[in-house]
Length: 299
Image 1: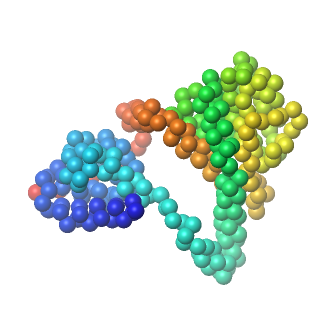
Image 2: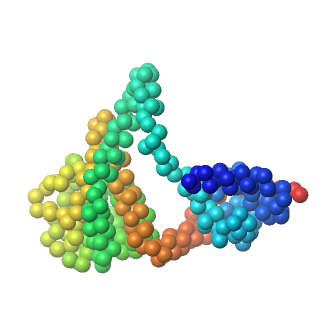
Image 3: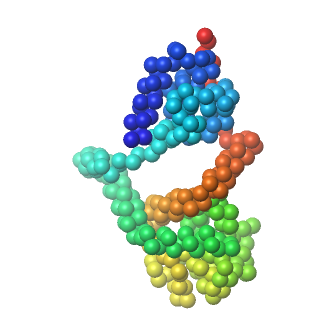
């Protein structure tokens, strides 16, 4: 539906661009030429790239029949997400199977990734998600920890999640120990731990300590029994099988991404405002590289 709406909007812009005022004509050309960027960028960044004011973008949205900029941008944003991939079949994998040795290796790797993501998400029951969200959102402090290769997963989860859940804290900090950060944890706190075989000794220690303090524990791992004296409140089992001797983390990332989506949804308008504030600060401090402005159209 969103893809069709995006196509119709682009068609309207192309047929009506010559009848638009100069400022709106610039916007129309930019949207036609850069629909992907338009779907991603916030209003101020789009305005800067085009060389117009944010108010001009709002006027363009109203000209196209929308109440504001966000509803106008939404079809372009949604079109960046492939929502019907599961209906497209796996013919492309079968074609790889018929190719040379390099293609067959890619076929095997791709099929494995699809399988581990599907299985990990299938084991992510609704009851577990609701219980985990309850623990996270009601906790005084919600800690997330991981080490070594799993640390990248925990870092990303914290980087995005803190915008929806300000109480989320990534530990350890300052090259210390995660247990140091949990010294005052109790039944009012929550620990999210990410670990896969071979399990990190530090993560095991953190889990044991959190359990002993009565904190709620959410475990994301490839096993429900990773070590004695660990009794998580919620376990999200992850499939990590691979063909390259190290675990595949595609399934873990998919589960974490779903949890992030639920956190943002649960945060409502407050979460949306925090996300907007973070983006505004990053833009104002020059955190992102910006492309040169598009050339103006002479009239």
